[in-house]
Length: 239
Image 1 (cartoon, rainbow, N blue to C red):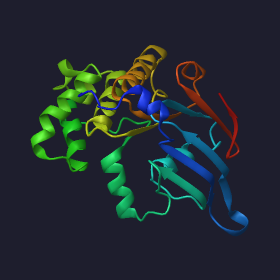
Image 2: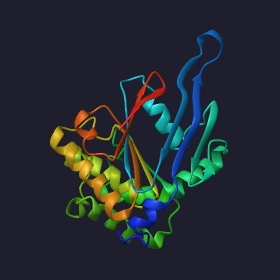
Image 3: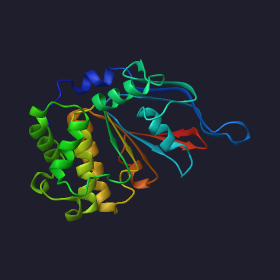
Image 4: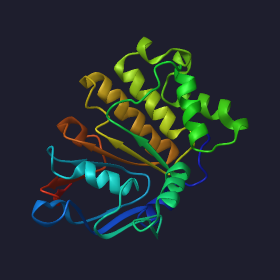
C-alpha cells in the first residue's frame, strides 16, 4: 500500500481521532432495562493500537459497536476526527463506515465460494470504490497481509490465520483511517494470533492507521499501545 503523506511527528501532535464522552447505552426499558455502558469516557490519538479488554458482558463489544457507528448511545457523544457521529442517521453512518472505517468480526465472514482476491474485491464494491482501482487495491491489501501467493485460494483451502488475514485485507483495501476488530484472535491459536497482531502493528507503523480491538487475551495486552479495561459497563483501568 502507498505510504501515507502524514508523518509520525504530525500524528503525535494531532488531537484525538476518536472520543467517547459520557457514553451510556441502555437496552430495553422500565424494569427490564439493562445498562450495558454507564458514562464511558475515552480519548484515542491517531496511529495507535488500542485494546478494550474485559470479560463477557463487560460492555466492550457494545462500546466497539458505538465507536464503529453501528449503534447510537442512549446518552453521551462520540466524536470521530472532531465531528460528532453519535447523532447521525443510518444513511450518513453507513457512508462514514464505507469511507473511513474498516470492520473485522470474530467470525471471518468470508464468502466461501469466492477466492481471497474476490472476497477483498467484493469489499471494495460495497465501499463504493471505482472499479478501475479494484485490482491494484485488492492486490496491495493482500500483499500487505502476506497472502498474494494465496489470493486465488478459497476459504476452505486456507488456515484460520490466513482467513483472518484475508478479512483484514478486505477491511483495509479501501484505505480507511480507522480499523475496528471484535476479538480478532479469539478463534486462533497463539502463533496465528501473533501473526495477526503483527499485521495490526505494521498497519499502525507503516500506514499510520488507528486500530481498536476487543480482547480478553493477556498476551495481546503486552503488544498494544494502550488498554482500556471495562467492567460492568465502565472503564475501571487504563494502561
